[in-house]
Length: 247
Image (tube, rainbow, N blue to C red):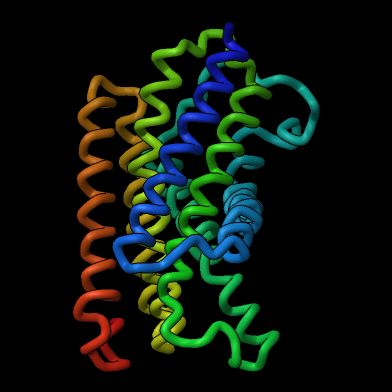
């Protein structure tokens, strides 16, 4: 039964995330770009690797080198406030840097001839790919940890939580790609790192409290408003602003 619940979470979460991405692209009269969608899925794992490398010194300092041994972890992890801040920042830096890498590498490979501006819509595809890959990653990590108490209700709630994650990944990826397009990548990247770190900090700080549901609602509102602002700026008044606007 647990296996069925995990499969339900994987299928439903992926379906909801993909539908959200398709709707967003339809709103700006674009279609799925399968190449950049696959780039987003691939570079999610680059982001996780960068995230892990940044977090590794603190993990080794706290746990020791036994972290590298194939010994199952027993018990829930408890983190101090500064550890939550550090790990949240590591996630923000690693994952947001990875979101811009496919476009930067493609521009370098083609000497700036591809992708052709305006290409900010590619950020939606990258963010969607990030979200889909994150679902697979969550399932794999949960499976490894032994999700013996994962219920069908958990699968449903987890799938709904993925809506917030998809909105957020799409928003940050679009803003970073827009920053690349306007040659203002650093301000856009720093803003997204800050927002990602803030969201992860909130999740880590309130994750074990009685405010989990309220936190999920707040995360959805935060992600929705952030994405709305990004889409309005980039695809609404974004056509009328100058190159120096992304600051």
